[in-house]
Amino acid sequence: MKTFASRNFARLLACSAGLSLAASPALVQAQAAGQPATNPQVQDAADDNPLGIPDSVQILGKSDPNLRTATALVNGTVITGTDIDQRVALVTSASEAEIPPDEMVRLRQQVLRNLIDETLQIQAAEAQELAVTDEQVNAQYLQLAAQNFGQEPEKMDAYLTGVGSSPASLKRQIKGELAWSSLIRQNVSPFINVAAEEVNDVLTRMEQSRGTEEYRLGEIYLSATPANREAVLQNAQRIIEQLRQGGSFVAYARQFSEASTAVVGGDLGFVRLGQLPGAISSAAATMQPGQLNGPIEVPGGYSIIYLIDKRQVLMADPRDALLSLKQISIGFPAGISQADAQARLEAFGTGVEQMRGCGDADQAAAALGATVVTNDQIRVRALPEQLQNIVLGLQLGQTTPPFGSIEEGVRVLMLCGRDDPEQSSGPNFEQVMNQLEEERINKRAQRYLRDLRNDAFIEYN
Image 1: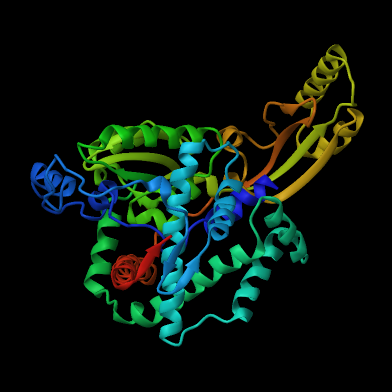
Image 2: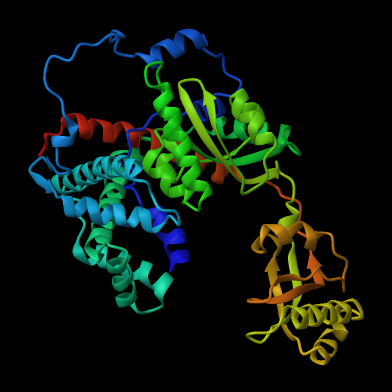
């Protein structure tokens, strides 16, 4: 069940625009590559203290945040402690590591902010006669259940209840996302325009960059001022620790990142190193897909980065090669001694080495007491990362080294065919146009949500 949580609920852990959003330094520099930069010292000073508040502040009234309960009234709509508890349970179900009490406090505060934004989105849709119906919500809920539990939605109901959440909590989040999508389609998308010259300019720059490496990065950006820099650094270090213990990067980015990319799980997309701030560029250059790095000090705060993937611009990716593989595997009986297991493993390895290619595999495997599974349509990138480079180095009829364990069985992969990908022609005009439009829609949507917050009447109990 943990796999289901991490793959599917991680993308539902925050509303479609559920954070206080700002552009991270990495994103700003990537988007503005080649443009004149502002004076960094002046800009940092403005970012650190945009309101001109003195460093020494005297509090005139009493302030005890511990006296506040985690509930709010948003334009008359109540957000209860139960709402927060159940949404927090969705977040924590996507993390394999236990969340410390101090981090749980911050997580609850963030979830409350997300629920407030979600409420504002639902209210705005209703005010504009774009209300989401129960039928729409239930259809989306059933689709999600079908993807993960077959045609038995009651199993997803039981899962949600079992992790401390509820079907109602997830349905409320689905309702918020559908409402926000409707608002964007009516109030934002029709007013976004991208000129053909802009698209052609992007295509030209891509062609000029052919063969250079691009890095697809995930980022969690935490802003910091001189006054709170140490506290923010400690928070970033705690997040790093949770991620290394199995926490979902997408979930943490959506809940904690202060960058505009938080709504897409921190995904910066593919960027070149020259488009990134120096510190992030240097860190990314040494990373392999799946690695985490940080906290990295950047202008205005700290970043945690995760290398999702890397590729060469407009070049075919060998990991898109289509393979024909035979998986040859053996199992071990329960309670087998270490000596007997080692002997069986050595016999298996010797037998595999003596196989004369794919035509001999089935008969030779039967003699070894091994089973054979054939797959003629598997991409290299679908294999575990540890095996991808090994398989790419194989010739027809060769096998990988044995891998696995006594508990789960030991296996090898034999390469029986390979169709290399065609040279990439890159995105076409329409795809680039859609990407630019999407970026502008997201930026305008952030301003729209900010306006909803500014106009709202919110009371905390």
